[in-house]
Image 1 (cartoon, rainbow, N blue to C red):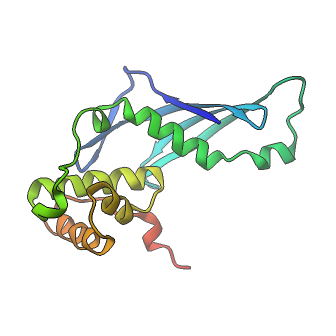
Image 2 (cartoon, helix red, strand yellow; image 1 turned 180 degrees about the horizontal axis):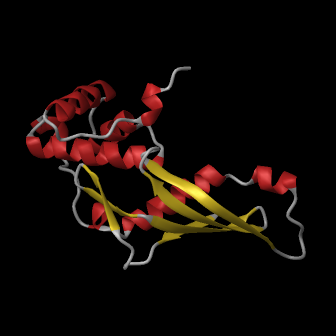
Length: 169
């Protein structure tokens, strides 16, 4: 499956906090999805804290038919996630700056905690596990990442809360 995300440069950039600016709308297209092409319109939902699909179009190829069974087999969440990630790569969020390679050795400096906030925010945006994303992104154990997330919150650098963490199961 080939997934691509794009947005119009003239779209208003939303400042969602923690040093992250994103487009409001992203168009996601995926080819070779079991012989079908899928296009999604993703919109940033402030309440959910992430992009959500607002429209989906499925096109059949080679004279195939779009059926309920086909629709249920399409991995919309994966297509949405991969397309949003592709689109965001084109923004300042991911294009130039990188977290410090020695963050695990230098400890929770202000700069490192800013990266904790950015990585956490991006993970929430993509629907990933945010603390694990911080651990992976900075090359530290998950327990260390958890402590750094708490410090970033305490210092006011991290303002987003993973909406999934407040769910009662």
